[in-house]
Image 1 (cartoon, one colour):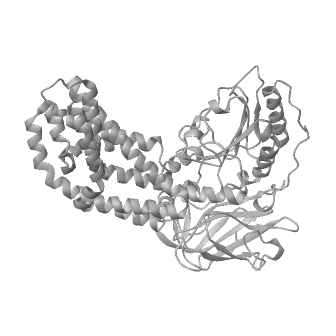
Image 2: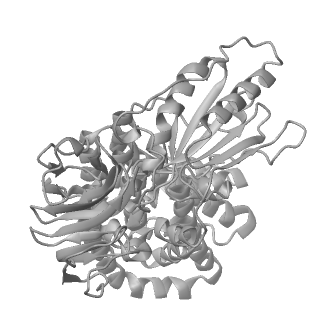
Image 3: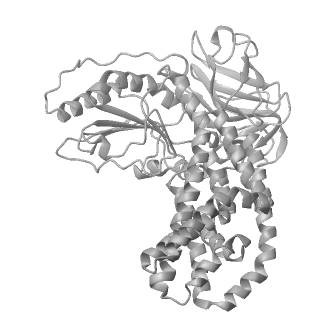
Length: 571
């Protein structure tokens, strides 16, 4: 809500901008006519035209980014030109000249009509003449599109900005000369403010170009809504057993919520509830660094292959747990690496998550052909029950006229997607102080400040410790110098660790198991000597025991600075 208030105020303050000068003659030329039939249509046309133009620019920037890495460079060039235009008015005038010329032609046509229609047409013309005022707010929206994609939120932000400008101009129409004099006194200060915003846009371009955006968010959790959501989720009790609810056709749960609020779609154009009627839909809440989610993927992919042609639509809702999972490039790469072919929607703002009142990763919701939720399951397991329900709903959708192979799929995951063993396992453990537990380094954690830590000589089961120089934030622990290490006395067959890098450069590490090389107990992301490299932000499988499962002491030592550790999970 605060950003909308600021956008509105920013629009109001454009009345002190030099870029508003081309607009004023047309506004005041009709000040002697009815405000309702003349002034108001002009302002409405101006606001609508500005919103459409600026939204197209934001969508264009986001499309360039989504195209590929070269498109990202083109979008950054667009932002660079925008920032320079704010700093150098002559460049801004040159860039906006086509819009101003087109607006002038529209204005001539509007002058020949004295009706409300003519005033509305004049407002459209004014919108083109007013295009240079788009600079500051459009810069922010384009930067947002570079990070999260252009969407309805961006368009609403622009509309609120335009409404603020229309408000100030309406006051100018009604108040007349006094407001006009006040505007002239404020022009000089606004010019410096405009240039300052231009510098801010250039800094934003540099941040995006160097990849600071995602890493900055990952260090400052309070700057994104995911952090707030996670604090709320952390207060809820995690499922201690499989939670499975099946509802008959006669006793239905509410209708399936829409996918409104989606950040970006993969493998499909945006899907609406209406287009899915007649289909059986499985909505899967997941995130690509969640080990429990990864272990359900073999079943989801098998169901998609077996039942897609018979009317099943699987939609993966990717709701991020960590800030780096909000990056479309990271999510798209994970989808390709995991071989996911069904539609996936990014839910960076937790809009779809909240619409379902969901609390877990993974969570499956089965929706019948009439759009009613008929089955829900949280966590891993219950695959046979879920598949039988898929078959039941497909038969209902085809009124019993469907012939299918009623045998259940047989899958076996590989690597991180392999099913967990039914053995005692250490709990999921977060390195960031927001959800930290069982850390036994004797030094107290210094939040968001680099500090030295040490590990005790003996760790009890499920205890862990830092050693070396680390900076612990709400989400992660970041090693500040080579030689930093994490030790963990764990239980379970597998040990996974979500890792990333601060500076986008590869970080080498070495894993030690019970004081020696892991050998045949190495995971898929290290060799038998325990050597590995962090190249992207994701879950890394470091240990997979091949023999007797027991309690072991794990140690990971980072040979370079700049690694971030987020969470341990076990299998």
